[in-house]
Amino acid sequence: MLTAVQLQVFNYARGQHNVVQVAKPDCTFANATQVAGLTDTPFNLTLKHPGTFYYACSVSGHCDAGMLLTVHVSDAVLEAATQPPPPPAGSGVQIKQPSTAGQSRCAPPVLVLGTNDTFQVSCLSPGVPLSPGQVANRYYTLANPYPSKIVAIVQEKSQIVDGTGRAVPLSEAYAHHFFGNARFVVAEGAELRGTEVKQPLPQPYFQLVNGTFFNDPANRRMNIHLINTLGVGPADIAKCIECWCDTIAAFQQKYHGGSVCCSAHDCPTPRAKEPPTVYYLQYNVSYRDPKQIPDLIQASPVLLDVANGSIEYDVFEEGPGSVDTKTLTAPFDQHCPQVFPFGLLRCTGHQHIGGICMEIVDTEAGHVICTSCSVYGNSTSADTPGQEKGYLVEMTDDTLVPPYPLKPGQNVTIVSKYNADKNHFGVMALWILTVTNWDPTCPGGAPATNTLAGSLDVYTTFAGPAGGAVPNATTY
Image 1: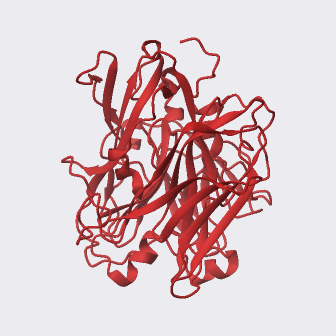
Image 2: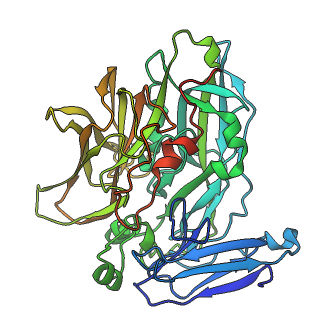
Image 3: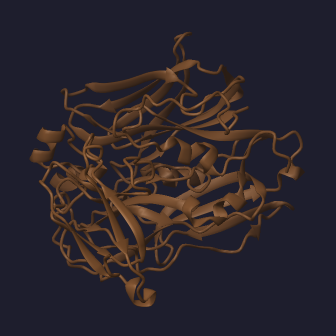
């Protein structure tokens, strides 16, 4: 039995293993939290909370081969145990401990001017303190912006701010990705500031959310991956924000960049010893009483991944003007099988720098259903929030009225195109989709299990029964 504030040391072969915290003592990596990457060995983890914790290596096959650890921590004085050490000095140190910058919080609901039933709530995540060159990639518990009843979402907006409320440019705090429930934050990465200008769904379509579901803090976890790039030179920016792996990891694991490899080696900066700036994910939601919406049609979020659950993949240099095209053909509803026809209402993609466009193709008919393209900042400076030169700042939407009809089990081909005039490692190509006549209880049977070995099952958390979804037959 370990005592609280016990130091747990993970010492493993560099480039061959990592350490993730899992929810239970098995090799299921859904909602796992990475605590040490392929190059972070040896890694010291300070355990400051009583309880039982489980750690594993998520490299394919390693957990099943026995790389799974159970750690028991005894009760201790929590007031002392929950105070983490100050952020470590030095360039590119990944923050592993809970933030000292306060809990997530929401302001009281405010009635939207000109309405009698629409309320807006503005919230901040826990603070993320980062000095130049530092990386934060962990799960945070967000405050619940919703009342304890079923409401209809009107709009979701989000951005990164500092303690003064200043909108922070991507050239300072790069938003690598956000993974969590779509009913909190609708963007998945750097394009989140584009949500400020996104239009609500066309009437009478609304997403419904059961606010009672989010009374449980476990259902409000959000993976926030931020990188402070202040002072990082132009030659190092790409490997910093794409989290390039070292040569050993790239050779042995065929994994050249991405979240697992974010480490001290990627973001060298002469400003590393500056005091940290505390950053926050600001997320605003507005909602209505569904009983006040005549002829309401429920819409639901669905996530698709061109990498088939691996989330990240590599784009290799092919020469000037070349384009890398990655595709995946599968049933649209493979992760939540349906029994009745449904419709595709809105398509929004998520790509990283280098992304060009994404498409969804009706495989049988052969035509493009919808497209979402990357928008890059058009200012003369990389420091203009929302228009950072050279940064991906928004993804376009396609809204289909009437919704495009799809049948249960119908194949679609999802397409992602990246500029391949140079390497882009650890990129993503995710679809954040809105569908109608969708049953979140997945009545068509067990979800498909044909995702790649070792991949992350983010689908259910994002959009399925565990996501606070409201069944279509619900009376509200």
